[in-house]
Length: 271
Image 1 (spheres, rainbow, N blue to C red):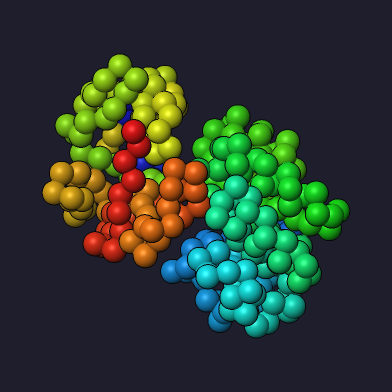
Image 2: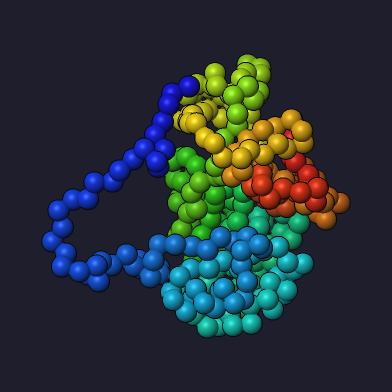
């Protein structure tokens, strides 16, 4: 396993600048005042936060963890104010609600959608983006999450206007066993290009490895997995257990940090 630099090891050396003042800097985009998007999570979004950020031309996403699309709309009473900076999260058209959730939002003049899937490089995500884009020229679609160039291209070709990149973070300790296409192997022996089992049950190549020393407190999950606190796990909340099956599991699953896990969640183990 190769060693990598962390933020503590890097000093960014500034280049000579012709700017006379920081006020001359402009980080705005055609979409918003700053290239920052609030997370589409039910523990992050609130009507108050939404109103505050959109008033400053910062993009927010109304999460999708409501009983139905009508409840999602009602949770955002000021949805017509600064609406160009507000997206509404939806799941796959192959999920429990099929196209009805998206159609309800569209019929109520919502034109900004976020296809919110923990694993965005899927046929379901691509087809959902294509369907939403077919609703009209004014429709804007954010989609993801993805972590590879090929995944980015698939969503771009499907018509996505914004693509969310990055799937979790965090590290396991040495000795943690990883399932590869050739059997189990200690994580410290994993090499770039090696095919490892992913959260959706497929084998994908390792694109990079990272090792570093830390003195931060660690988390132990189910008395057998030791990891850093920010390592995310793919889980389903117990309240959704009766609704989940092999076809819709990615609609209900979400990534939760190790230090935020509780007995209310069930880990998903790919077969």
